[in-house]
Amino acid sequence: MKPVLRALASILFLAGPAHAVDYGVFGALFPVEEPSILDIILGRLSEMDANGELAQMQQDMQDKARSWVNRPIPVAGMRPAEVYRSYNVDLSIILDRDLVDHRGVVFARAGTRVNPLEHSRFNQRLVFIDGDDPDQVAFAVDLANQEPVKLILVNGAPLELTETHQKLFYFDQGGVISERFGLTVVPSVVSRADPVMLVEEIPVSGGENQ
Image 1 (tube, helix red, strand yellow):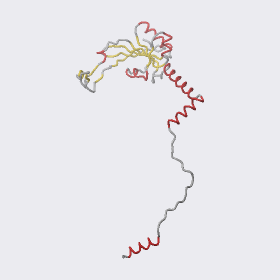
Image 2 (image 1 turned 90 degrees about the vertical axis):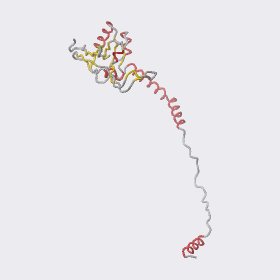
Image 3 (image 1 turned 135 degrees about the horizontal axis):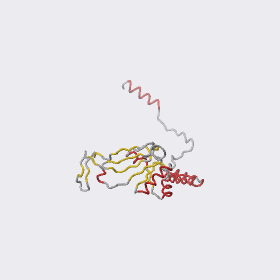
Image 4 (image 1 turned 135 degrees about the vertical axis):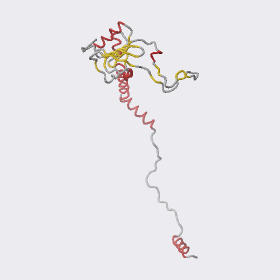
């Protein structure tokens, strides 16, 4: 037998037979369990319902929603008109893709210049005002008594003004319309002046009213 094999045999002989040893059980064993997230949520809601927190939260949400409807967030960057000024706004757009009808027939090619005024009969003047300025409100209501106009607020309470003056007041949510016409002051009156729109800034609280 080779020396290495003899040495290995001697080690195994000296080690003798192996036996498993039972050291017993130390401490209690518990199954691994995680609480259901749904149970946690339902439990928390039950607690909030019991102590009145849930009812208060619902009331707060209703108050915030009512406040937002009654007085939307003002359009940023607006100031009162101080002098009369007018400018034109071209609403034309350049198509970035072909337009097709429901049958797949192209009726306008990409690159075509389209002026929406050529396809619209809308002819009402748009009057933009700060609804918290009594002079601007009086100016807008006076115009509305003379001709059909759309009264649009950039600040103020549209429902309250509608009820008070029996005129429908809109609100420029997010300033989308104001931005399209480049408005920065009020009152501003936007009128159709084909092939463009005419914007007039009209001071009503002092300044130069022409």
